[in-house]
Amino acid sequence: METSSTKKIDFDWSTMKFRGITTEDTDLWRRIYPGVDMKKEFQAMVQWLDRQVVSRMPLKVNKKGRKRSWKKFITNWLKKEQMKAVGL
Image (cartoon, one colour):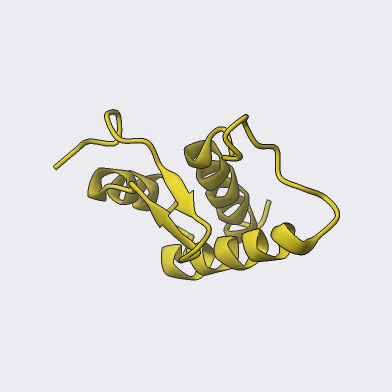
């Protein structure tokens, strides 16, 4: 099994699913963001990304058409939801 440091997280636009998320990643996120329902939030991320494809505000992408850091996108999303869960 590859660790999160050796495998890059990516998003498959054809299947609308994240790839490369390891069990270490999810275990870490569950510890850091205990007030967040991971399944619900990943569904919300996918729905948000789906809306961005058709909106007038394109995602920031690199030369290959990929978002630069999916891990950063995920952790920022989860951090925001954790703050909502604790009332901040």
